[in-house]
Amino acid sequence: MKLGEKIRSLRTEKHMTLRDLSKKSGCSLGFLSQVERDKVSPTISSLRKIADALDTNIISLFEEEQTLDSIVVKKSQRGKFENKRSRVKYELLRPQFSDTTIEALYMYLEGGASSGQSPHSHDGEELAIVIKGKLKIEVGGKTYVLEEGDSAVYKSNIPHRWANPTDEQTEVIWINHPPTF
Image (cartoon, rainbow, N blue to C red; front, side, top):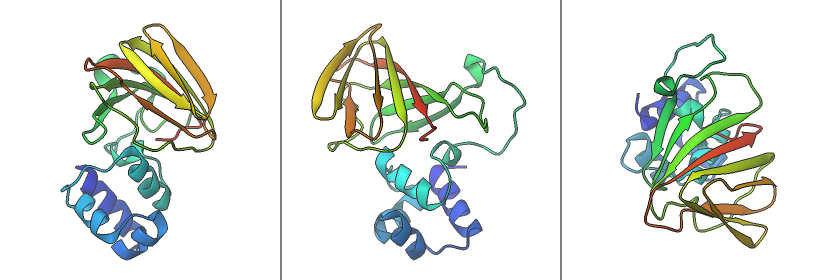
């Protein structure tokens, strides 16, 4: 099921109109219509607003309905999704549908990929570990450049954003508590 279909399905399950979702998420009616028809790829920030309005998390918008009874995730079985707009591919490092309070993602950031122009904030904490390449993180107005093997941890309620400042792919393990996707 495509992202737009999943959003439409969740919205209709909750007996919400597109207008209801627009009001609750703060996203425009036209934008949501395009998202549901898979005409545009929303940013992570927009996905977070939509997921919150639907009382779910971002990962559930990409997951297929199945149950897994395991604590192990084989590399070949990672839940995968891509955000073409922010130019990031994500792989879920915890079992899908897990009730754990930790979220771990393996992220592939294309050259120039970013979380957006403006810093964002939310509850929780984040830990980023650079596996390959470089990652620029801005936290509370201060900028840090991380290279292979470097890590950063911070409270997520401090305005923050990130970017791959190079033309090469960067690989990062990103851990959130509680899950934000």
